[in-house]
Image (cartoon, rainbow, N blue to C red; front, side, top):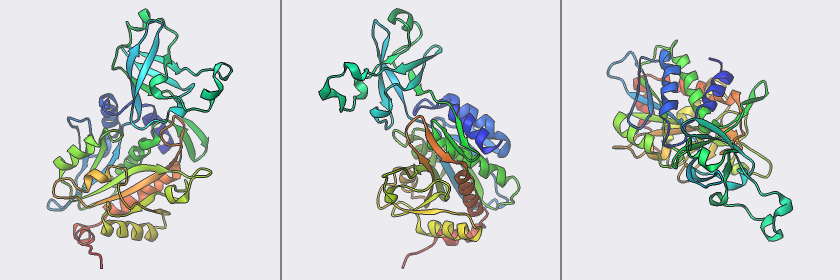
Length: 352
């Protein structure tokens, strides 16, 4: 499957954090032919295994989260207006006039209503509305709506996938469906590589809320090393270069106490060797990613983090350069070619 087509398909899946079951089944079905084994665990993590030829070799975990931000229905009034509670980090400013889908007994389109500026008090005009004060309008009256929608139903963003030009795309949930696409590229590449180590590829869950998926899976799988793929902030006007990276110039490879220095140095080396661009990002504390959980799982897992630049993160119009997905996959695939002996030396790396 081509990268753009795969990203479009995955972007359209609904996998609001904690409600990933349907998407998990579709992801498993999509990628099953690229691996030796596939299973879905109790948290709906999708786990693919690509066996290495050395039965006593190491296990390397590659993970990217499949879940997305969204909402739950928390109220339905008699006029048919729906109150919502956010799942994950959502800025209320992006919600006014936003199209959504309510996933009740059937899917119903809705819009987040906005007060016309003509009717606003001057003192309220400059204030950001709170999510608890917003309502979703489906056009249905309360009595009719309550037959289809219930408290606790999931609400997701409605957004069209768009190609902005031949190598850029926009849509919802690119954080972190770009990572899932990257793992597809890695699995495709591994079909033609005689690799020594066992490779575990995982589409994990609940990253946007609690890291529950990766926390439980990393403990169970006990890999010898882990590489987390996530999205990072693509540069936009007035955003500091200290907290953003440039789309089209390759993935961020993070440096900091959350990451294993030997793995980071090897990824730098491999990127240079195969002439793949990458960007460095200093993370002096919590990376805000699944790397925070993998590093301290069990007796500890050496972890690296590669992030794909995505503009307008946590909106319905996230934007990515598709080349960065390819670049990320190439660097990680090269790392997976390491022999068990070379990987051992990387993991034994000691600072001065």
